[in-house]
Image (cartoon, rainbow, N blue to C red; front, top):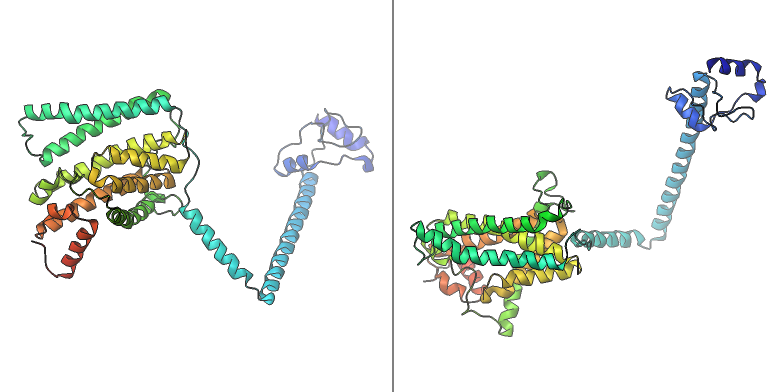
Length: 393
């Protein structure tokens, strides 16, 4: 082939020497021999088997010249664009119409809206209605059997008294319910595996924890701060409408004796602020809410899962407030698509309530009477204690 190339260099007229395509020149500039392809040589006497002249200097010089011309054209285009943009900016300033200020205001509103917006894309759920109902029904049945029958029998045989709920009984019961509940969710979903990465995503890496776009920690803090006044507003509306059920059972009633005595607070916090958020967020947000997006939009899925979250707590006094908290938890999950976010919010909420009641009880506040009043009564008690005006008997 080299001989054929040499012959073509000698016998072809000077004016008819091959012109090289840009693709061949690019290969030559990289030190790659020209390939025998139909477009490699445009000479009318060349064939697909002919080889371009092995002159690397010729190819490299032509390639450098072509690349230089391209760079010059790009620089010229960019310069012209910059000049046009600068000219337009100067014209806007000379007009004095305030268009720049309006643009900045619009962009700020858009940035805020995009920061608070929730993706309307459904989760890639591979199962349908039957599996949603079966999964939730099986989990509820297991929850009742374990919490209502199995654990009491085991604790009685171990020598624990069930007359009063102790921190140890609370912790062990919640631990068993968490393990069995997560097992039910795993058994329900694993047969559709491997599951998409978006389902049950749990990421607590600190690299993007405070990223405003989808940082799990920053949005957990934002959601928790939003939940506090939201629950207060809901409580005031309920009181104004006369819908408050202060005589009914609440979520805190069972553990209230442990909080007032001050014994085993560590076990209480571990059960209510670690194990309970882990189980409930996997069930209500990771499974139920994500599955509902298969048959309804994301806001509707947040609402339905929040109502289910409230009803299954079986606390009539706190039902509407629990639905409000559930909506905040659902929003935080939809915003980041990371289960770590609602888990942190849930943990902060439960631990905040427990610590607040322990502190109030240690300072002499009648917590049991206070909880049967309005939310504003609790806030006023806290403010009075912080301002040093006295304590409630």
